[in-house]
Amino acid sequence: LRPASAVVAAASAELDVLPPSDAEMRAAAAAGGVASVEGTQVHEMRLKYAFELTEKETSVVPRLQSLHDQLYDSPLDSMLWRLQDANGATLQYGGAMHDARPAKLGKGSYVIDVLLRHPEVGLLSSLTDLPLLLHMPLPKPLGCPVYGARHTASSRAHGGAEPVSAGWLTKGAHKDLYVSPPSREGGVAVPEWVAPGDVLVGELRLDVTSPTVSALPLVFEPPSHPTKAKEKDEEEDDEAAPKDGAPLAGGAAAAGGEAVVETVTATEAEAKEAEAREAAAAVRDEEALSKKLLEGSLAHLGSLRAASASRSRY
Image (tube, rainbow, N blue to C red; front, side, top):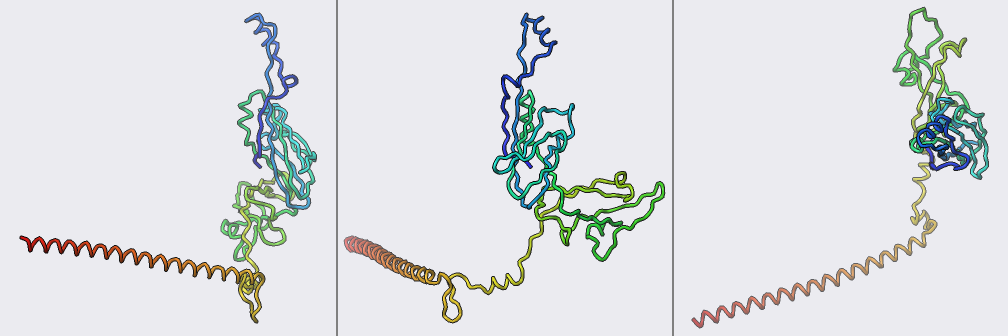
């Protein structure tokens, strides 16, 4: 999740001021004779994350991954978070150093407020887009078959290929293993609420007798869910259903047929009126053109008469 809002401000001027050290006090007194030095103001940043759950009950563990598992080497102080529901009730709280116990949440909208503190405003401003992770367990583990060839893992064992069976490796030997991504079909498909941007994590156990020693981490970024095709019966019903205003068999009219008929009648009247206006405009244009042609002909005839009179005179 990315924060919906980030506010950086100075903390309390009375309670959130770091006092100067003894060395600073002695240095200031020796330099200018000042017996006291002002402390350092602590600033705070409040981040707000909003998310929504569609499942009836889900266990959620918030985590700031970039600040997780850090104590004395952490760049910040007071890394606290608070989980609230849509009514503002606090459901869970914890720190960014370690994970809190899972919170059982139902369907609805939730908000997580994060408080970060540091004397430097610039450091807090650089974390205004700090991402937050939500760890949510899957209802059922997703199986990821392991194959000995890459093409079988990529094609999900198309053609009937079998997963790698149990076996032994001698010292110094190696064997290539390819893990197929979890399928989106069957009873253990990826849940519908898993969206692009989420990450599925798991492990590959090379030795079932010693899972804690031979477990390798697995990470899978699921793509978007496939588009569901419409059922054949629904398509036939859509094709058989009459359009709005279309007459039904037997002379019956569909719902809203009268309004459609009135609309069609009004449209025809408007079309006839437009045709009449166009015809009148055409007549006016024709009369204007005829008048222009007549005036031009008379002017030309006058010129010819003047030229004839001039020739007869000379």
